Length: 167
Image 1 (cartoon, rainbow, N blue to C red):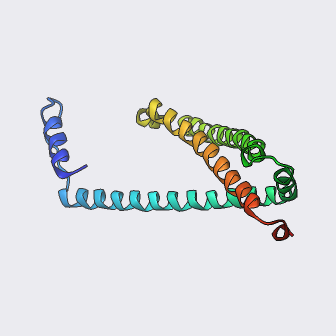
Image 2 (image 1 turned 135 degrees about the horizontal axis):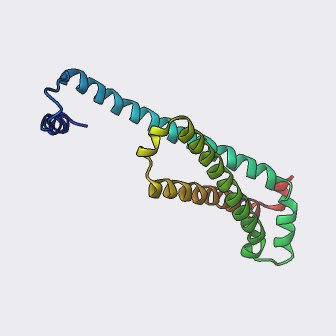
Image 3 (image 1 turned 90 degrees about the vertical axis):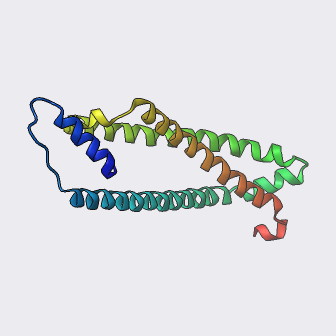
């Protein structure tokens, strides 16, 4: 909120017959608003950093899981399978794992929202069902995207390697 919006709200409230006067310290409200904006930027940065860390951890986990299949991947290529044929089963598995992971994350977040609604009923007024649905869909799509991307990168890495480099 900016001071103009606060003045508008103050004038609106003053027009009600039950309100005789309304007073607030403008400089204090300005400080509160600036601090809330700084906190918002800090939390957004923290969220991006955690998202990056989670992406790196997922990629490393997939890389370790596919490390055991590096000889199978190379053998399939050596017997004449194209890169698409070799990578297709790994990408389908990544799609399924990403979907399941995204749905698990959505279920956990939905549980937290349900608990918060039970403990703080006032929070319901702030919730927008469309934005919540978009958030849930974005989480599922992000889970699928990161799994497929990581699997594709790792499988192609092993396909590009020479046989001697696999050891």
